[in-house]
Length: 69
Image (cartoon, rainbow, N blue to C red; front, side):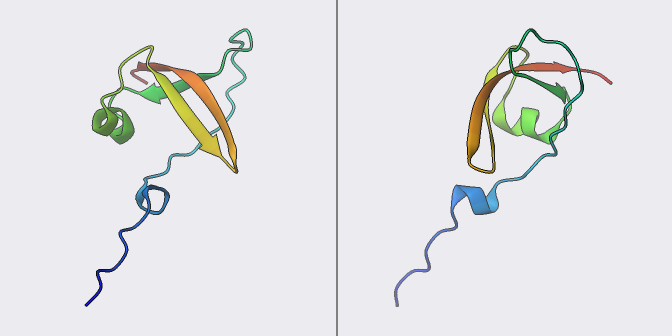
């Protein structure tokens, strides 16, 4: 019997909600996440990591700023 195709990364990836915070970062894309976020833990992200953010076919690379509430 043929094996079932493995699910794609996109179909199994966890998603997080994005929103604009209105913080002036001098036009540098910055991503703020709580340091206890499941994504930070699972991916091993630390402060000042560069991460790719994708939404609706658009991609940016942002600097991660992590911290407490």
